[in-house]
Image (tube, rainbow, N blue to C red; front, side, top):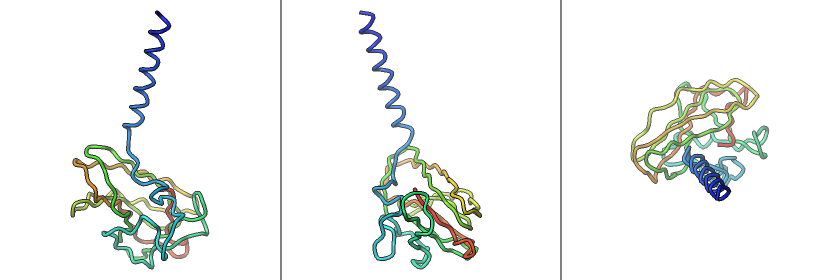
Length: 172
C-alpha cells in the first residue's frame, strides 16, 4: 500500500510540474514561422512583413555574413533617427496569457518592441542600443486582455549604421 501511494504522489507531482511549465508562456513565433530567417521568397523573409510594417523593403535584407544559428539572419536598415516598424504577419494569442519574445541582435542601431492588434498599437518597450559584432539576447514580454487573431509583433528600428552592417536579428 505504501508503494502505491508514493507512486501516485510522484505521478501527481510530475503532472503538476508539467502543467506549470506549460503555463509559463506560449510560443507564437518559432522555426515554423521562420523565426530563424532561413526561408525567403522574392527577397522577403517568409512569415514576416505584416500589414503594419513600415520599414521599406530595401531595409529588409537576407543576410548571410553572420547568423546566430543556421546560415542566415535578417538585416534591418533604418539610418534615420525616426523609427520604422518591421513586423510579423498576423499571429494568434490567447487572453491574459503572457508571451515572451526572445531574439538575438548584433550590428549598430537601436531596436525596441511592441505589438499591433485590432487597429491599435501597444506601448513600446525601451530601445536596446546595439553596438557590437557579438550577438546580444533581447527579451520582451507582453500580455493582452482578450484573445486575438490579428496580432503583429513589432521590431521598431532606428539609427542603424552602415559601417557596422546596420542591425541583424536572428532566432526570434
